[in-house]
Length: 209
Image (cartoon, rainbow, N blue to C red; front, side):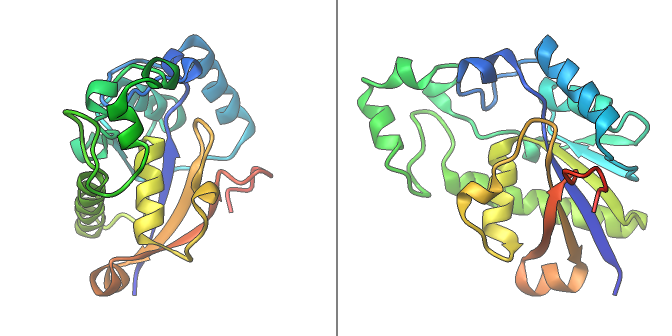
């Protein structure tokens, strides 16, 4: 049974990230420091080559894909966009701390969206749909190596909901321009809706394994 390897990569740093703002669907570009960090990582770490890159349509992800996988064929997939934080978009926790709606949202839950925003259940559902599309496309094209350049929230949802083995939420956090590598077969996905988490990517020693 043919196996497929996919690298899940978080976009580079933006000014809003530095300021601690919620920037789900806010289309902000990479900061100058974010661009510098990515080029530095591309020089130091082994990202390897992939046959196709599936990328969130937001600028910070498209720029990241251009830097890390500039020779690969890239396709935008709207389902890979970050969570829509609704009324909390582009605001900091400090700015929201006295908002009762923010306190309610922080209680968590799959069906507890921010005002005019997206619920966690909606995000999980489109993560599943995105993976279905990507896996089917890789099978159709005959590709075995791909990358997904997306957002930390999307990566965390994919790993928590569909990855094995199961880890603590803290273990799924990743730095800018970094992420995880997963392995999947068509039968595993169709039978269990799951993939195997291989480890962090790129590896700290630059081996890419």
